[in-house]
Length: 234
Image 1 (tube, rainbow, N blue to C red):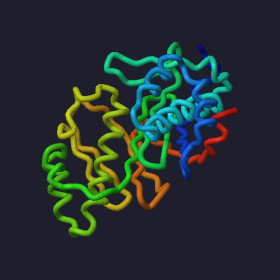
Image 2 (cartoon, helix red, strand yellow; image 1 turned 30 degrees about the horizontal axis):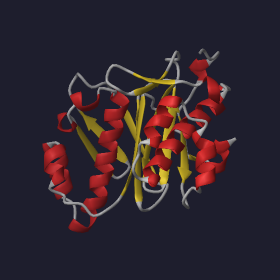
Image 3 (cartoon, rainbow, N blue to C red; image 1 turned 60 degrees about the vertical axis):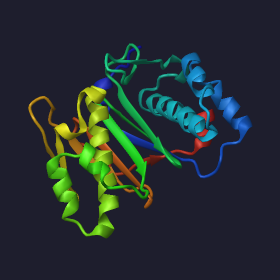
């Protein structure tokens, strides 16, 4: 599967807001657009809302790739790399990543490695930061007023997750092996030579969520492209 002019592919970010529960008839119609492997995985999910997010995630990626490359949806096949990161079979020129949380499903498409993470902000025991954050990140977190710490935790968490997902090595790259320091809109990565020079951006798609992207590219889009879930059915 090749795409002519794939070097012209630039980073795009897509999002679907699941504003209401997907009815079962629409779910079943969309289900038939999944690969057999994905159908099996989705069909085994115990919670309907988890199945919906997983289904919408794959179809959103196919929609985005198809829109950007003119590839028919049925020609887009997914595999995994040596570390289990999803990739497109037969086409290394198009990279993608997908994430979902609560009412949102998001994906990023680029010509080079990219990672995306969305998380709903919720009450959390901040002691978890001591387990997963670096010393520098923990120190920065504790300098903030108590009222701002939870939101900042999810800033750093989604930024770190986006790097882990862009890097593609999974859990073999520990979360505390690098530091991300956020000061206003400025995001700084402090890491050893084993981690490439990545760039970050955050988008505000919902005041109750954090959305972060990590990419090799410095050229981020000005905004997220919002897609109605009905478009994924066509």
